[in-house]
Image (tube, rainbow over all chains, first blue to last red; front, side, top):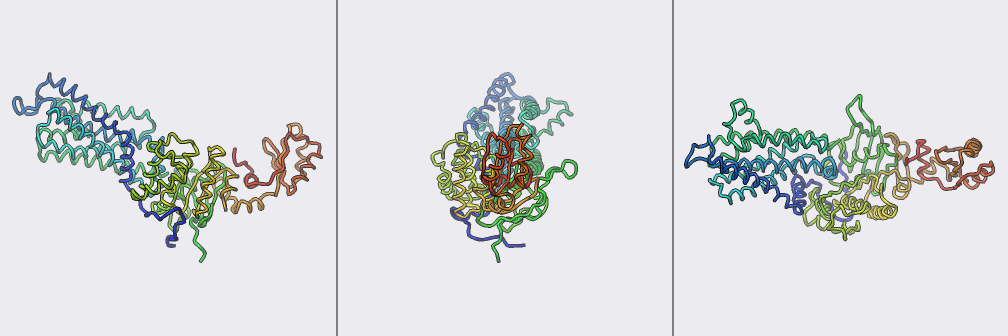
Length: 275
Length: 314
């Protein structure tokens, strides 16, 4: 083997360090863009607020307390309190997943942004990790905004509700990774319809608007497998002041789900981007 | 010890697709070296394997076979370390359309791990170099084709690279934009930057390259300095004749017999000779009445035609 050539760089000015900006540079790129387009984030907070007002407060007026939670009377859960954490989980999910599906697809297929990034020392791993980090940060940011609205509406009954923030990061990680995997499978913009075909029913049926007890047992098992159901569980329990080891189940589920998705997505991205 | 070449390719191959049925060999065992400070060209028609070669040198596409050493490191294993010292100008301008002109340079520097202060200084220098200072805070959507290409080149210089790779640098640009770009590339060369470029324009190759290889169907068919290749593979001058179909049929054979080498193209005849005026007067003497007749010096285009039997630009 020969040694690396180490002569003075014959260029305009000094020698750069031979290293990669890493995932951090990828996050910086997104921050740069969102400096121009931050109203989009505000719009994403607005959507769950609409749901909360129409379902939580509107339908909540008819429903009153949620049957099957903690009986009736003093300790019972009011309907908007029941719906709010589910909408928070959904906001974290959508925020993260939109970023790695919609936003990444253009950069991957049409603009070929990643191709030019990968001519630098940046690796596919740097890109994937950076985009995932940004997506979950963005998901958490949307969640925090929504949490403020929920707080203002007087729906937060327990200080444990603050657990919502780290939980939202975990939900963001799981769905950002899933999105990263999905985006490698998409062939064209029409395929986004297929995502909607999965996401909308999941949003409607993963105990967002009513408790699991409504379903017969076999359906319950099916719903319990959904990542959104687990996300809602992770947020709803502390939101309602119920904190215990039971929270470890959804947390572990999301961690495994996200890590597995990320691992498969990385392998697929490597072949897509390094042909 | 002679100075080590910056790039050494030995029996380099690129094969796309799965082995067997749908396999396609884009680069078929090529050897070449690029020396420090020179402008080295890969000349060839579309599909000759130039871009595939460039992508392997840029360490964005894995080598399928043979050895590729860049800056003393193995392209197969040291991709990121090599890329840290390269500047890449891809064929399509993949500028970041979501960012402004200046931001494009700032973030690109960050990909190389440069500090915020450092990239800010570099960006200002490079905007000046690319003559884009006035456009610095505009969206890249507002740039003309020539400006976009200059931004892509400026971006490739953000890490002060040892080698700049340019894939078809002036394709799609108008003559004025091409000349401005060539002028910028000359400046880089004067400053000692090694340039490696692909082109299918023979004028570009003659203007910019100290040395080049001619590629055809994934192989190298000739190597040398432009003037060297011209004197080795073709005559000093060429007589170009455009004839009516009638004249072509009547006088074609007679014209052919005037010279040792002759090309029958779709729209014109090329007569290779060291004395163009003499051949032209003898062509007129045959009785043929060309629509246009032209004596010119041989170019790389003629070298390419000799070597491959085909024209460079179809």
